[in-house]
Amino acid sequence: MVSTMRRVFMTCLLFASVSAQTANLGVFANAGDVGAPALAGSTVFDPATKQYRIAGAGINMWAKQDQFQYVWKEMTGDFSVAATLQFVGQGAEHRKGGIMVRQSLDTDATYADVMIHGNGMPSLQWRPRKGEDTNTFDLPIEGAGTFSIRFVRTGVKMFMYAGRNGAQPKELVHTEVAFQGPVLVGLAVCSHDPAVKDTVVFSNVSLEAAAPAGPVRPPAGPAK
Amino acid sequence: MRALVLLCLLAVSAVTQTGNFGAFTNSDDVGAPPLKGSAEYDPATKQYKITGTGADIWAKADQFHYVWREMSGDFAVTATTKFLTEGNAHRKASIMLRKTIDADSPFLHLAIHGDGLSAVQFRSAKADTTNTLDFPMQAPGVFTLKLMRQGATVTVFLAREGETLKELGRTQNQLGSPVLVGLGVASHSVEALNTVQFSNITVEPLAAPPAAR
Image (tube, rainbow over all chains, first blue to last red; front, side):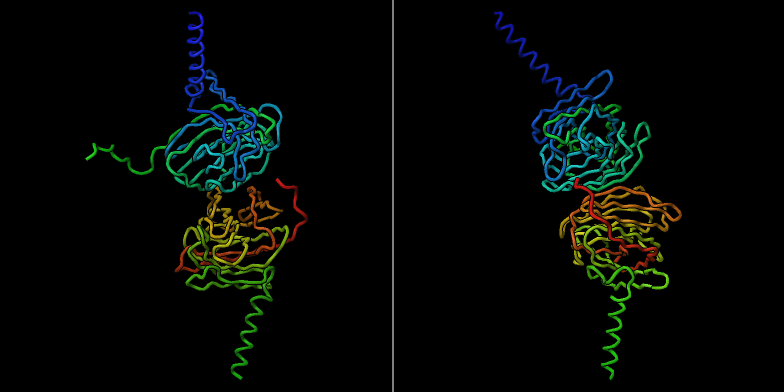
């Protein structure tokens, strides 16, 4: 009897843990590692402060392979994502924290991201097609700090905004990436060192779907 | 006698094309646009007047007029661009690096469009699609462009007339050496010619590259 009770209790605990992982991530739906980094990452969302504390390891998000911790939601169409981020502690110069838009969870998936590096370098990076090399555009470095960033998708255009230490995010540059259908939209952290985990705190996170540009199609009628 | 005169004329024309061309050595249309482009160099003012036509510098193949020289290693190029003709909003003037003069060659350029849009665009592999980085819109005008290559890093700078050059940012590319370095003009229309004046041109080799990323 006691052992049955204990099993039921354990099952409930397990269930609660899984629920927490998928149901209490604020504006996002899922969290996990991409690219199987040697150290497992983690994402903790605090419903009171609405902050995300994301710990990620991984060699890099670069060239043909990405390793990082990801918290995401699937979206279709245009959107605008914003977050303020702060690195916790010391780490590699090129550790990364930012907003990641991705075609899939594959390590070599098509993606576009706005990344702040540990040394304060803001970058717009993208892999135009699955399995290809990453492209980068690195904005001038003003120094490490707290960055407010925004990533806006309008069709194939991906607009990067950033502001440092309280400055209003300013439009800096945009590129074009041809995503197909639904995409994953979220926050990413990579330590740029497989033996190290880095923590980044994201606050003021917002995720807005943009109204469709064209006329809204009437709902589909019954099949004929 | 007539044949000899023609031969001499041809020879003079060829010398003009390659011998008295300022910082560059060659000029030609790339991608065989239906109209013919041209380039004039004025040794007194050290200005180029480049007339280009062609569908665009975009997607998998390019049509434009190119003025270039071959270089290896690291370098910096600056030029001030002024559109002399009206035309398509996306007619382009650029500082262009190019692997070959094939229409679908890998390239990277810092371009200013007729409507004031500045952009870094590149094709990483032969016949691949073009990538673009577009900067926030500015009003049309006279701009100074600077492109600096150090190893795989290309840093771009821009200034409106009367302003000082400001770094926009940097990207990475694998064009390697030797590479064609020059000025490009496209009209963004196969039926139109676009003339751009390039002045204050500098082409300087630079010292060894910084450490790899």
